[in-house]
Length: 138
Picture (cartoon, rainbow, N blue to C red):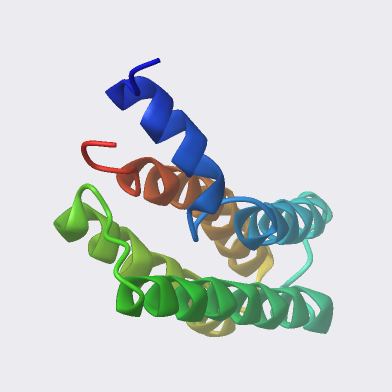
C-alpha cells in the first residue's frame, strides 16, 4: 500500500516536539493562573505572590518546551513555517515576564487583569506554535 502525504504526516505527528505534555502542561498552568487572576480582578485585588509564582512556573514550563524544541532542531527536525514558528516561540518565552513586569507596574486590580489577559493569550500562541510545526512533505 503506497504511503500518501496525509498518512505520513499523521503517523509522524506523534513525534513532534511541540505536542503532548510539553504543551498540555503550559496550557493548563496558564489557564489556572488566568483563573486565579480573574478572581483577584473581580475581587478588586492587586496581583499577589501566587500569581507571580504561577507566572514563574509557567515560564519554566515554556523554557522546557523551548529547550526540547531546540534539541529537536539540532536533531534535524524542522518546522513547516520556520519564520512564524520562531516568532511564536520567542513570543511565548516573553509573555510571562511581560505579565510580571506590567503587573508590578500596576499594583491595582488592573495588574491582575493584565496577568489574566496574558495568561489567556498564552494557550492561543501555543496552539498556533503547534500548527506551524508540521511534517513537510511527509
